Length: 189
Length: 45
Image (cartoon, rainbow over all chains, first blue to last red; front, side):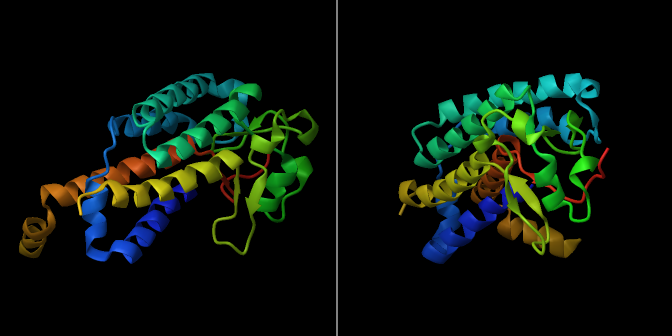
């Protein structure tokens, strides 16, 4: 959910730049098929509600999760003329690539998990375990493919919501911020 | 309740509703496209 902050940041920047006109410019954003974004979330909900456990127990959730990326790619394709969506789309592709080459979930190492869960030990996090209520699976560092695209970056405590994120996540956040500024450029003046 | 109705009449314009819908869609896009993991939600297995 931390990525939702990108919407707030983008909106605040837009408000600072355009004050009262910011909202009308957002309304003028020429986005297509936005309802598919809600569908993508709906498809991911079963995985995001699954507690920690072996990945074998969440086969159906995994299929729906992968299917949601097809929906996301359709949204990106339908809105590809917007620069913000191009950046966001690159982020989605980066995440999808990391997910696909690592067996269908976003990989995260035990070391990274100890950084966002202070007090835990790397040995606590068994390889192959779905990290509950997330899209991640625990993978040993030496076994991760394309680790540069995995959830390897960390916002540690004392940040209120310690979080591990990927390069793709950064691109998605950036894309949304750019998109909200872009709306100010394409909106009615 | 009357106050809520008044607020709705005042601010629930089609344009404002469209803004809310687009922002909601962007949040959904961020949530579905991204894969960040929060800490503290689960203990190790």
